[in-house]
Image (cartoon, rainbow, N blue to C red; front, top):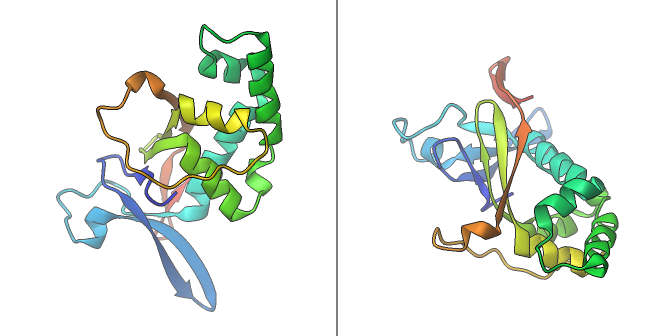
Length: 178
């Protein structure tokens, strides 16, 4: 999710790693925390990477496996029955998103996501309607994309918002996303 993840105050969150007791722990750390800007820092300075990723992947998988939600969110008025079926077929090819190789997951996310923001009670996922449609029309083929910044002036009609209910909790000195 590097390059896509923000905290509730809009600070970019970047991947970091901590080794302890022979184990490696991955986190996303807020740039405000990294640069010591406590006034700009949100409530969560650091979040376990696997928890954030798990919430996002599960929500996207639920979208891909729920045909009516997918069609409600991602069809356009000009779509005929064959186009709608092609979207559903493409979604079926990606329902195993969470079990794919990390490079395939990253390619899918870069092609379809605009931004992810983590808040105290939810994770907000901004999906590109055109990006997801393009991936689904290609079926199970791995998208070839590069991360490019999206400007605020881009067509806001292309953005579909999804949310995941998730609460930030402090557990034994560690911030968790439950």
